[in-house]
Image (cartoon, rainbow, N blue to C red; front, side):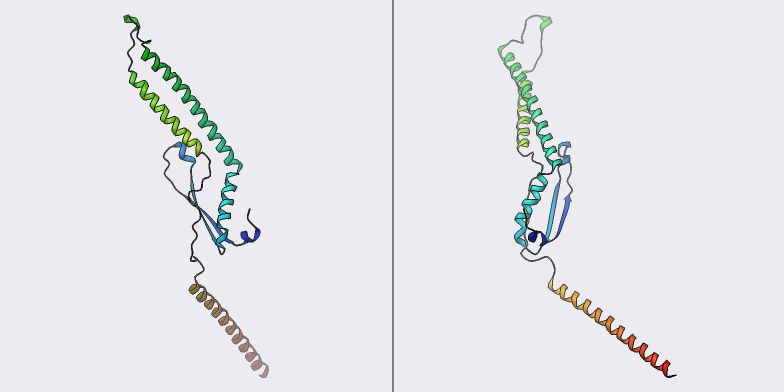
Length: 194
């Protein structure tokens, strides 16, 4: 966790969503965000980054969604395993010649290469699902904070010019106020003498 002193050093945090093209329904929930932090103490960035990620990962909504995705993916993998077993059994029966029977009424036309290609497709899909299961965690850090060596703001020239302008403005108001007071006193003295 971060100390109160470190948190007090944070001037501003901005979170911006990066728009992406949705490739398919599975990717519809994915989003990328850019977090921009302005601070005078750059040493807090590693702690801040870790705390933001931990906070998002421990969010109840995120935990539920991750668990739902894991269950769904595991169920699909289980169904693929069942289909692969059935296809392997069919392939072994074809290899042994058990499907070939004599007689016109028992004639079966079948392309055995389609079984092999379907087995290959299901194995690829299973491997893809197993890989996605490994990275199913909803919150992932793509790139950590980039620390700029030169401060972005405030710029010295602009700060000096802004301060000088504000100072001159207040001095001008003060001078105008004093002139108006002198004029009022002078006019009151003239009216009092008349």
